[in-house]
Structure formats: C-alpha cells, structure tokens
View 1 (tube, rainbow, N blue to C red):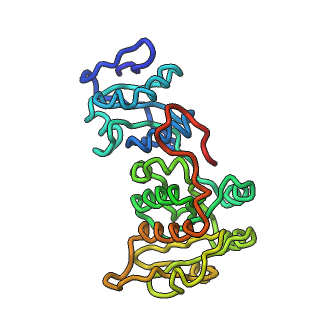
View 2: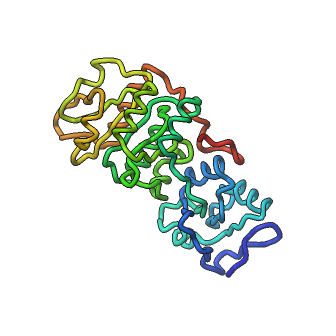
View 3: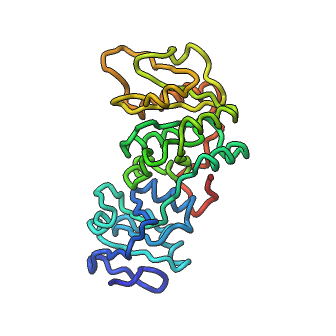
Length: 287
C-alpha cells in the first residue's frame, strides 16, 4: 500500500490504485466538490481519509493541507482511482471517507426547534424513496430556509453519497430526521405550534387560497401513490399546486421547491444557515 501523501510524504501519481482502508458500517465515501467542501467546512473531525485526483490537487489544496497538518491520511491519485473509491464517475476530483452523519430523531428535532437552532418550515417525506429526489429536496430546503427534512424511520432514504452529491453541500446544513410514528409525531409537532399541511395533485385548496402558517410541516407523498392513508388522515389541511393538467403531477422535488418558495415569499428565509461551500477551513456546523 502506498503511504499517505501527508506531511513529509510525496504522492506518486500513476504508481498505485488508491488503496482504501477498511470501511466500517458507520462510514460513508462522499464525493463531489460541493458535498466534500461542505463536509470539510461543517464536520472536519468526521474525515477519515481523502482522495484527490491529480488534476484537482490545486482546487482542494486547503483540504489536503489541513489533512497534512493534522496527520490525516490523504492521497493524490489518478482520476480513475478516485472514481473507483467513489463508485461514481461524477466525483469531480475528490472522494472523502468519513463517518456517516446520523439522523436526528423526533426528540432531537423538537428540542432544536424549541431552542431556535432549527427554524423555518419542515418537509415531511411520505414514501419518497429516490436518493436523487432527496438530494434535490435537501438543496432546495437549504436555499429556501427550511429547517429539516423528516420521514418515517426505515422508509426515509438514507443520505447516500449520490444524495449528498446532488444536494451540493446541503446535506451538511439541513438535518434529516427519522421519526418512529408519524401520527404521534405530528401530534407533538402540532402541540409545538406547527400546522401539518398535506399536498396533493388532485384535491385540496389552491396553494394561495389561504396564507401558509409561520410554522408549517409540508407533507409530500410519493409521485406514484401520494400520501399514505395513515398520514393523510393526520394532516390539518391539504393544498394543491394549480397547473395545466397536461401531465398528472409534478416531480416531488419540484413541488417541494414551489411550496417552500411560497412560504418564503411570506415569511422570508430566516432558517438559512451559513454557506455550504466556499470556506477555506472548518466551520461550526448546524445541529
């Protein structure tokens, strides 16, 4: 195995195949420029090892210099080796093996909301499984000031490397919350002042018929079947986004963007956290 290209060591491009240390179940290989820069900015202590493509070594010099200063393993390797480590051709020159960010639970969400560290509307995903949709929803949530993305534990997709890359850094800013029981947790959120607003392509009031409450939980069902009957019975009101009816429905991530933009037009984007990218070094992360 080639030694890390850390302090006092030179990488030998083309001489090795970017061997990767054993990856534990609690670790994930993240890839993509924005996702990795956000990881470095918000969770630097979670970094285990960094792989940078030869052509991108200048772009990620701050990360490799930080690794060298702290004796964190990193390697400068051919682009095809980064692709093997990342498991994707869309790595943008970097892959980082890091400890996986664990989701919050309902108790953590309510505590953070009461403390004011999570603000803005919440997005509840009911049966949404596509990781690319999750990534886009996280990115949209960060841009428009949503506080968290929520779903039922075991059904909410994990923030996979693909989802984190599509999120463009937002996976390190917007918490993902796994709830055990949506009906019970809606009751707790309602007691905390939230209104549970379901969404549908076929029924409900037009989105602008009534103002959206300051504390809103938007419930988005799957594109195929919509909200589950259990969840639909637990909502406070239902809205729809008026359209031409030329197609049956919107992509769930697009619908999320319209809903959050409507909320932000009335209430602003106070929940927006610090920029996910463009930092020169580690920064304090959101809960």
